[in-house]
Image 1 (tube, rainbow, N blue to C red):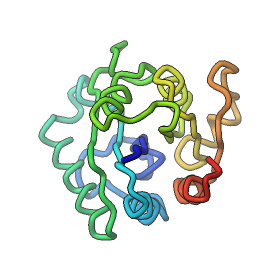
Image 2 (image 1 turned 180 degrees about the vertical axis):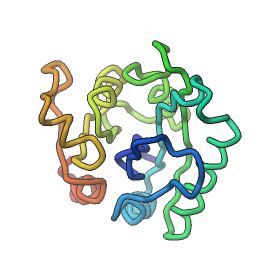
Image 3 (image 1 turned 135 degrees about the vertical axis):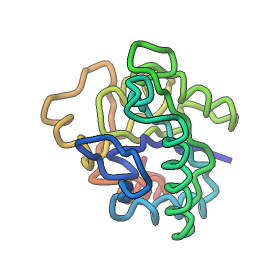
Length: 180
């Protein structure tokens, strides 16, 4: 079964100026739930790989983060969408799991025995693209979240090619039409 990797904030949920600390802080990006459900229906495993440095900074506890991810899973499931795995790096410094390093992506790839070159990683920041490059995954940038700012600043040449789409829904449309 193929794998689709997603960043969390800016791809699946709306970025907040302050971190998402409670289930009440969760707002899905329009179309994200349906896009994930369509991936599920097409036979994809879906995994989220997210940096959450608020853990290291003690702004958020592990229990709070688990509660947020459980609520996110329920929110997605209410629309028929399943995320098979949520991986998180809570470090706020250089770490092999923390994006821009590929640790979380590699962990998901191993777990699902996915082929990196056939596995997209969808993000909204340069660090997402760097992690995807280092893991050997397809690099996909969405304009939601911080994506527009990321594009405006420019992308490092070495992460190209990068497929750019308006949102996760458009990415999934392209994937399901075999154009990604």
